[in-house]
Length: 141
Image (cartoon, rainbow, N blue to C red; front, side):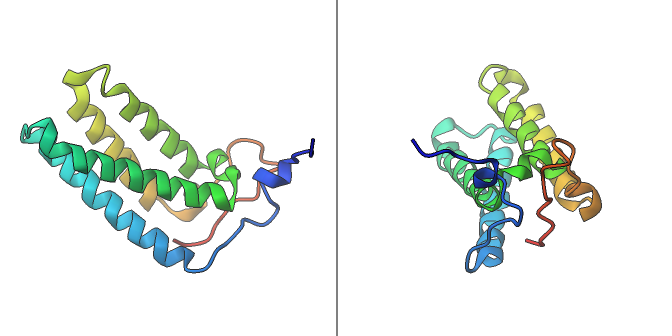
């Protein structure tokens, strides 16, 4: 059995791929559009059948964004921005269990995401866990 090292998941230099920034921009636009439509649908009490495609689009675009970060380095989960994503995921996972609070949970996730995405890079990319072993991915996009 082949040994899997720390650097397999957390390389010393975050991995890159062609057209990374353009793809992430397109995914971010899709994510904001679908999440905003989904939230508006809940606020205006649209039926589940109308909201399902927006939910799927939000989940898929969010997971693809996370996948591009994890491809670069799992170390992103130790940065403020990665921890923000994990908090958002917890809030969203609570929605089916606290259905009456779903709008508040979605609004909270949206606010946390907006603040996390627009805070200065020095804070957004700050490594909070495993500082001696993680190299922050400070690239734009």
